[in-house]
Length: 286
Figure (cartoon, rainbow, N blue to C red):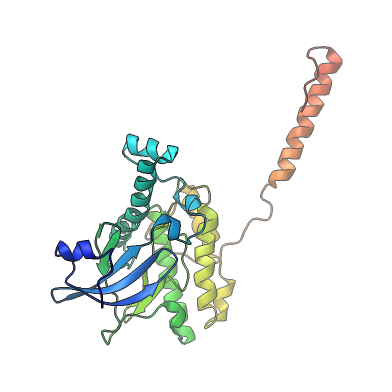
């Protein structure tokens, strides 16, 4: 096929010899099957920021830190240089997440590097050498669903131990080869410790995956891995060797924030009345 404009520099640099076909086009990138020598790989071409339809990107980037102070200041100010650096950071985040998660024992495509906004990485194939299907295209018996769901919960746990939450995990971001699930699509990966939305994003990731597998094994819908994972993470008790149960029960007696605030206001008002009665202070508006 005709070489896409964005991949042309990689061909000129000898990183790609041939573009075989387009595999898919999504909300943040278009993916191609490419060849370098005898190796078949995939090239993920990120769309420019103004052409991406990925919603609330800033929400996912919250907590990400730039090691370069000048770059960080430019990104905060929103200058042209800053926007370029922010775009580069968005693209490089996936490469960094892939390396980190592979080291943590999560099955992800092997990355070969990001060049001019094009991520080169391993092409995941099935036992016949064909492109591996996405999880949403796979039908399985209950036993397989239970086994693969457990594998995915372990992967999510290992991600969290590595300080990462996928943030957009679902049956559309998991491939299935002959060895099981492979996690893909990580440019929006969330910093588990620095992002205020981390807990809700973890819960969504877990619930999306559980809901899909529960189609084949309904008993999985009764599990609660997200609260179990987050509780252990917050206590500093989560490790890659933790044996999850999925049986975590939410404490209904936990403090209600609104009630606590009302109690604080009432106590403040009572103290203000006392001080006014004794003439110690002038009235302060609450």
